[in-house]
Length: 301
Image 1 (tube, rainbow, N blue to C red):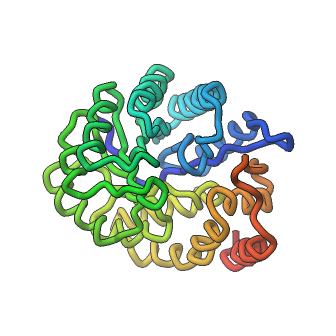
Image 2: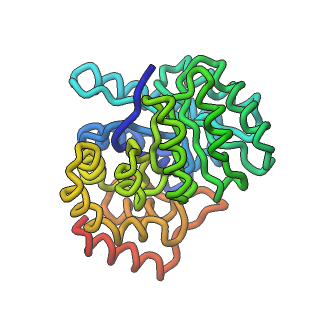
């Protein structure tokens, strides 16, 4: 079973001026990430504005990502896994999206807790039980702030016992919960990956036994996020801290007026394909623009 560790980019979905998906811009971003040494790629998640995309757009993006990752992996000793978002608040759809990702060549499915429905812990377990039967490795995505319900550690431990469950993207923002996951679940399943969903918590999480980050900031700075994460994983915490504190102002600025609105504005400033967001998301306000621009300068990005 695949083992996830290091820095993974939660990729934006670039848009053109008329609001359509910029597929060539997406391809350029993939190449930029791969050439910068990123450890893994994660399109079609929250940062990818997936709720606003059509199934046809999603399928085309998966095909482009699979193509670019395969080209890279064929000529590189470093094999980069492709983690595709397949979540839904409808279990049948989550299963269907996971089957699609598997058939198109993805390596891992990123499956978010069912949102809006606010299921019980038993409902959450059965949701992941159904998805796990597809046969594609699954990275559980726990983000209470967006879904309205937390995956309790006891529930995650049950999920981790299922076949094909290989880790969790822990975006609860609660380092105490993350430590519980590391101590209770990794002790039983040593290859179970615990990845941060918050850039600012990457270093603390790795310090207590976590495995890396699914990063928003790495859309802009993949080489630095990868270097910081892997220094920490290798035990070079002094080196990792230097990068962490260098980037700390941007860790905050990248979410100053929402996600992916803030990171998209920063990417546009740096001439990387990003473009606009789709409604109901709108461009960041003028105050946020200045915060982002100042942080880019302060961090030397």
